[in-house]
Length: 397
Image 1 (cartoon, rainbow, N blue to C red):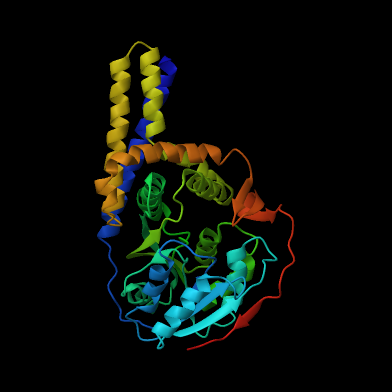
Image 2 (cartoon, rainbow, N blue to C red):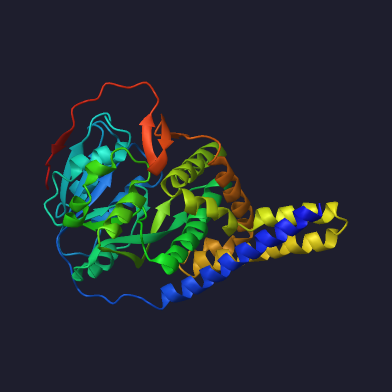
């Protein structure tokens, strides 16, 4: 039991070192704000959709309400019967000044259905810049101005955004949102400090057309799960700069039940495990609560319950500080302060998700089952379905 106590103390020391790194990274990030260049080129918004989601209309409408000179929106779906497109058509009628197009990919013939859709969408794009964002994202009217401004520098190949989680009801939704605002933010700003941005975050990826085409375009991503990480990584390796914007967006949490939230977060952890195996393995040292629990058990077993309880309490304080520093200090999520008392639980859950990522190589995504392999490649293991012919359709307003 003494060994458990010492192991817990050592692990907590490592996670405290990570906390210090996060605090420094937050300070560094906040003091290096980019200045507006006034660069506002015409841009294409790529919006893949799939079915109805909580707050979908509000999220999509936020992209129509941009304070930006000229942009087009391309919606991508598997077929024209997707109910999300009825909302898109409603918004197109409400904002007739915005050019809107639709692309249909049919049933996916390659593993990544979203990329299959984007492959068709880029065929309709008429600009030199793509803003790729998920359907569960809500943005402010200055979003496009802020994320396009850095492209005045020709060295910038991609811009990505941090995000705060927005719960949609229930404890599990709130806990997942805290993970987005705190765990994701802490990891991203720390990675930016240690090695610079070598990846992108899926809720917003803004890229030059020539940079994306140089690394193989959407076609190169069709067989991969972590398309966001890889696209940013490939562009960085090709010599362009990937920039983490100071513009923060809202990421709507779609999962309200424990089962759905668990499946989503384990899938994300598995994709990270195969895309970045070494970094993912080291992630265990960024958690605090499992080491606090280990110390408590070890302390009780070794006849030092008060000492073990003290280490456990230190782990809780560690996570409370992380919640406020990353969740409020960077992405300004009020829940990261208001509900910081929940973050120790979310931290322990994150460790459990990390453990679960090593349980198998299979994931379920959009009701389809896949097997992951080295580099994050996916292979469908569900029965194949007949694929409809993909088509791009220009319905410009």
